[in-house]
Length: 275
Image (cartoon, rainbow, N blue to C red; front, side, top):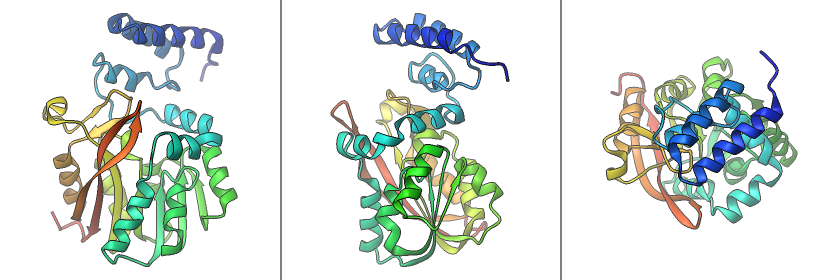
């Protein structure tokens, strides 16, 4: 891969951001295309920014280089920003639902997109063996320092699931993973392949009003994160052999002081013939 001209890239990206913030979305879109020409791997997330502006097609997922860079850069302040500043409490909401429904304890827990260990910390005492997976090495290092996981991997979630040769799990959690994925077919199928019979798949998603979604299965919202239609999520679960237990309305987080609506899904793996 050719070496990136970091100075030129920074200049191009800052120019595009300035145009976007000024409301000149057409000029911003053209400027972002120049950013992509300098950085084809898309460390800055141009693909999702263009989709958010309505100036590009909806990608199947956020660029891997973008997600890795984003979380590696914010690893040291991640817990404070997410929990204190953005009001993110999905791991605790998941814990409470599991307890309320009398689900658990679990033998093997897989925490996809584990980050610094917020979900691992919330569920650690509910599982005998806890595995964490995250793209961002800096996040995984912090999770390791907390001592919450028996095993940790630096890997993309679906890649890990597709390559995993270890024993299957009886709880797979994926909190705050779907906002970086559009197409959920690979995730649901790969999760199913790593489930014991009767295992639980628990995850959160973000959504947008029907008049914004306009019948789309998924789209990139105003904060460069994917939103999913609940009907689409439920279809993907059923196709992969999961029976939906519940899909509760939640506030996923806050952005600019406004609540971001979403769902917390709990599904049980009943086998590939469930659909």
